[in-house]
Amino acid sequence: MRNNASLPAILAVVTSLAAYAGCEPDKGLQTQIDSATGGFHTAVQDFGRPTDPRIAQSWQPNQPNYNQQGYTQQPYSQQQPVDPATYSQQYGQPTPQGRFTNAARSPQVDSAQFNAGAGAMPPRRPETILVGSFNIQTFGTSKVKDPWVMERLAEVIRMFDVVGIQEIRSIDQTILDVLIGYVNSSGGRYTYVIGPRLGRTVSKEQYAYIYDSDRIASSPNATYTLNDDIDALHREPLIGRFVAKSNLTNRPWTFTLVNLHTDPDEAIQEVNSMGGIMREIRNYEFAAAREDDCLLLGDLNAAPAKMAALQSVGGVYPLISNQPTNVRESELYDNILIEPTLTNEYTGRSGVLILRNLFGITMNDALKLSDHNPIWAEFSIEERGSEAPRPNQQMATQPNFSQR
Image (cartoon, rainbow, N blue to C red):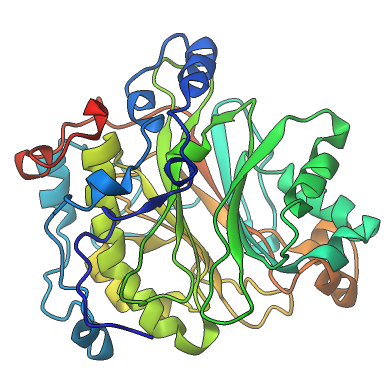
């Protein structure tokens, strides 16, 4: 049920999974990253900071009015679209060089060298990071009990450095441990962070991020869930901060992922509402963690043509635009969206990993894994922007989390 209370700050009043559990900042995360990167501190300084709700309640960045009226009519209709040029100038971020056109804001992919449409996917390489999203349809105990399914799900996950997972349905909180056991059975060191069970009905779902800890660093203290106090979304997104681990650069890429699964019956409303939410997430991440790369990924249940407000207000661009993402190859539901003038680490390569082609199986067998194909995008392992920007003065005057 929606209420009339406005959201004081869309990203400020958050439920930090670690802080809620009473955990201290993850001191081991900085040590882990330092040992892998030769002392990279810039973004890590903020990673171990718990988002204390007691502090967050007083955080008041500029934002649209997230009240009931704003949602039942046309959300953010009075808001001006984000001007990428102004935004980049304000935060000191350079525009990408030749990767996106200013007019079309579309990636320039060399199709002669790479055919994403055929379901191809580049191998994991030391100089790049592969980010993925996978709705493992109704992932629960029935799939966990099927070794054939679990072995193939594990093979998919091993193709990514970090992958956002949607539609974890089980009450049993050990099923991801079982999956990680399959993933690491060949000697890997994957781990995960998971969000709370969410939903308006008895059917609850969880989000998770699974990542290769040899290549990526994160922590439960760097993961939090949006507090949607007006019930605009069926399942509030799980937001996580990550940093690449590499000895190839002293400026490894840092990034924030926003994991979302919209409700199919209200997908368009929820997707368009995410325009303003993404803008606030980006503002918050600049102020709280000096982060400029905020990627929205997940099962949006909507094609890019229905993302007008998300793109104009949120300033994000869908990387999957002309290929179905469901196993039946009839709908484009899943996507990864970036702000192209800020995330110039994007290599221009993204696509859909077609399960039938990957395993050489029938459609019926592919549907045993999921009714969604995984999606992917490739990024440079090196931070290509300037040094971590200072928040603007307005944001800098807000409560300083680092003081706690």
